Image (cartoon, rainbow, N blue to C red):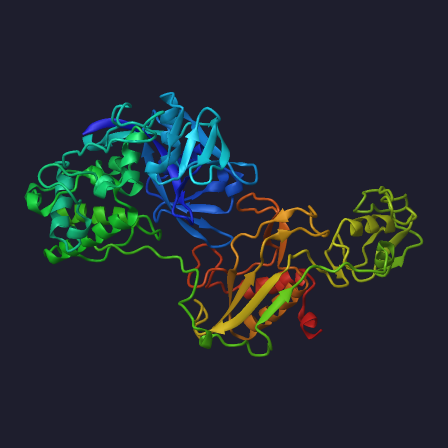
Length: 618
């Protein structure tokens, strides 16, 4: 064992199977939360980066939750050489189609920095699975097939957090000169990592003994050379991508689920339980454990548990020590081995799983909703209203006030008895600034000039909403882009509603161009996460909510175009103040069932948009 240091980079898995790094500030925040509560919990990412406000990380299950859509993504805690790019605060980025900068993954950014430090004119990324060449002379990324060029840049940022701990020799950082990162003639040709001898600590010997006895041992043991040495799992079968990472990056990376500092903290095991396996059964070094993916570690943990039970070790159910939060599966397996070896009875439970979608349903099982004739509703582009001027629209909802009270107009904050603080907009008919009117339903009083100005800054759809009490006059419509809303009943029940089927609503909106009613007319908008699946119980109140949602859809009030509160992206389709349940079989994100108050809450939200039972009858 050696004392070693490493920089910690927290990463999340995107939809393309790539591990994307969080920023240094976010990684520092996560590490600070871990130090404050070593037993785990959740991390609110918005406390470090406002653009990540809806995201949470559950440290026990190592999952990132997006609270508005219910999206669940794996995360990991990776270790890199302190002298590598993340340890120096160096970030390499490429220019995307929108002209903004996107950081490279760590497995690409680190070799780029190594090649630059060695003053190489270029770096070929083909050995690590990418058909690109980085040209340091022109600071560009060149596609080897199409010859298309994109600009790249090197940016200095905060260095990632540094941690120290006891690491096995096989995982200590090698000398910086290990391997070759490429050159003018050799590109990114690399030397495979030198095989390390298996770790001889008692814990690893026990892991190897149980692994050799388990049925999954043959599929999980390393391939290749037999005998004392065991080649790295990441470099087996001559994989150029995995072998290049160990050398070109100038160091190794450890996975959070097999973190050496965590494993080395275990106490000594009983000598009688530790026996080295025969050479013919295959061995697994701790370096090999570090290269295993999280699913592979879970399979090892399950195999170890089965082997322990088969060997006669008594087990009884044991609750989680820190309350209701789940135990990380890989850590649970290792903990089970250590406790069982010490003679303690163990039976670990599985963490709850996020269930976003129901089991697959055939078309014949999708039934129409009783009382609703069709199963699909489409919206088109908004048609401009012709005829009435803004002044005529506003006067329709007002009663003239001849003697205004001694109060302020809550729009311009001037006295009602004084002229309005707003001026006539260019091209608009003149409105006398001293005219005062009272809204007919709620009775609030304003300058006519102020209400006309407010109407001109809105959707101009012939409706008016009182700025004080939000009472709606006329029929309020929104700025939802064109799209399709589908709905049908499926033969599955929601948690909390076991006595009825489920209504599934599917929203589909394509990207497009913003219209005159949007913030940036003529500019493209994006539509992320579509189609979006939402769920309601198929009972009387659930069908009532669906009918009101159909009215909201026709009035273009379900979605709008704006700035995403989850990603910070502007000019994108977002929800518009009417909450939906996007999680079918669980409620880990707060957007699922059971939720006894949801239907009443969404009815109140629809009412605030001017949609009531009368709207359904109309």
